[in-house]
Length: 300
Ligand SMILES: NC(=O)c1ccc[n+]([C@@H]2O[C@H](COP(=O)([O-])OP(=O)(O)OC[C@H]3O[C@@H](n4cnc5c(N)ncnc54)[C@H](OP(=O)(O)O)[C@@H]3O)[C@@H](O)[C@H]2O)c1
Image 1 (cartoon, rainbow, N blue to C red):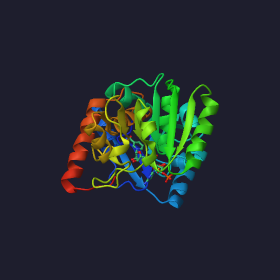
Image 2: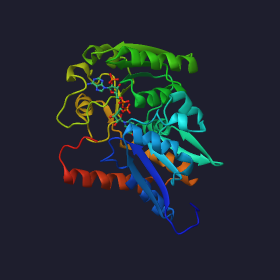
Image 3: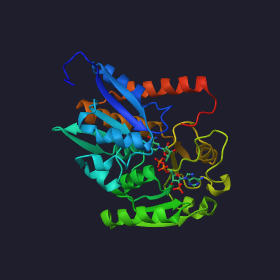
Image 4: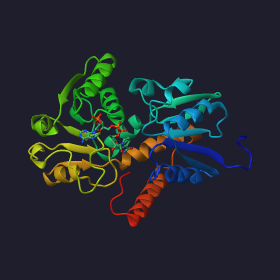
């Protein structure tokens, strides 16, 4: 489609489930702000339809798109190249075109680090960090922390093998960083919590307001030493995990800023223009208000 035609420019998001995604509203607010007539389409596809869509990528009528669970890895074979970050993390959440080629990027790393630094006022260099979970988001978080010079990164997961794989991959890229694997259950992690400057929840535990809880409250140390607790989940805010940490006097940060800044970076890849971050934040907050007015316990 010609960019100067009267047709709206098209972008998209692929994932499953996507019923409650806030990303299209955030991106469309940004496009409006720069005067573009553009839509962000929602492609909630099963694996077979996803593969069919990707096989037709050269003729697909979108200029760029996002990916979320479960397609951040599955998209890779269809792309001409990856950014160094996406290659190291092994996951792509943003695809854009350059010189007629489809390129995969990972803006979760940027989103996480920007939120951590701007909103959490936290610099990873020289710090000890505990990351809970060993899924896709955990890889982006750990890569980001390692690339900013964290001293020690402990990875705790209920499946030791997944955490060990992350540590093995990143030890090759960051040989000076001390990676340690901790096996669940998370109830046993009190010493690791107490020895951390930052604790990140990168599991999906906490999406429901009423539980289950990620760790019992007694695992979180008293605030003799102040720890920053960062939960990648943005709804609800605060999660039960963050509530317990705040009650013990620690600083807390939810995942909305990460969602915002990863979306801002994706927008910049697509448009080549600076992201209107405050407009995008407003769109996210409006979307959340609307979501909460419709339901008291939404999952995604
Ligand atoms: N704010 C943002 O912009 C942003 C961006 C990306 C992701 N996220 C959030 O981050 C979370 C993780 O996303 P993801 O993409 O990494 O998902 P994922 O790849 O499915 O990984 C989920 C992780 O949670 C673990 N887990 C699930 N239930 C658990 C339980 N009961 N006890 C212990 N561990 C458990 C899984 O362990 P197993 O491997 O053993 O199943 C896995 O390590 C989600 O809540 C997602 O919404 C937020």
